[in-house]
Image (cartoon, rainbow, N blue to C red):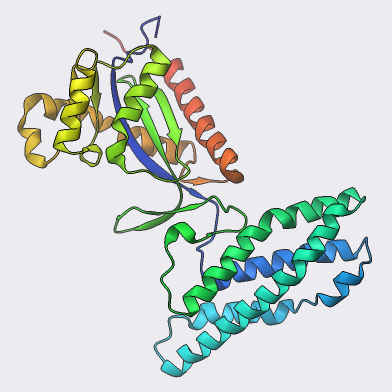
Length: 323
């Protein structure tokens, strides 16, 4: 900025979604995940430790896997007889997994109290996943009772329990499983700010956040900022925001409808705003942000930050345009 390579006085911002590295979450697949993780870890402990509590836990992996595969294979069958059979399979699978989770809970406490470090580590892994397992079983039971469970109460993966279900409304991909994040950049395509959301907020609430964070980073608000139509907070709210920032922000380009683009300045700023879409595409295709392979929410944030850093590094090393 001090060398004149970037101009943070004009910015554009947009949000996008990066998916977590999980499979499509159905009740049967999540229940199978719970069962196989419990079986795998208990088997490890049985190889190094003998506990009387472990003798009461028996795993029938082949039977449970067959239940899961049969449900997945025939879930969309139009045959009523087959649908009744699928419901019976779901009830059996849910019951068996629930019983196993209940038996594992007291055993995990024993693992955590053990002096063997390996047993402790396995106990910590299971203890970390038990809350997600309980929620998965609870949601499966509620679905069997015909209840429509809100997305906020669902766990979409025992491996990435922080994953959020996001409705995008796109024809080719209406639903995504991951997190939304915000990008702000200057005309030189340098990303000046980014922010990952644990729970996706409405875009209409983000303009004040963008301006405040820009002021924290650069010491003052931008002179101009461009956003797409989805950021429009409402005529009254936008007018109040303009009144609050009129001494620093000269122009906020946020169209409320298509006919606003008839204004010459709004049209020019919206053409400028469209450039952020190219940056998002570059991050997803060139820096592999379509799907995050890092583990946990902190890892997710690290992946976004690493991609932004690499993108900015490439931008800063480009030779200046002639003229």
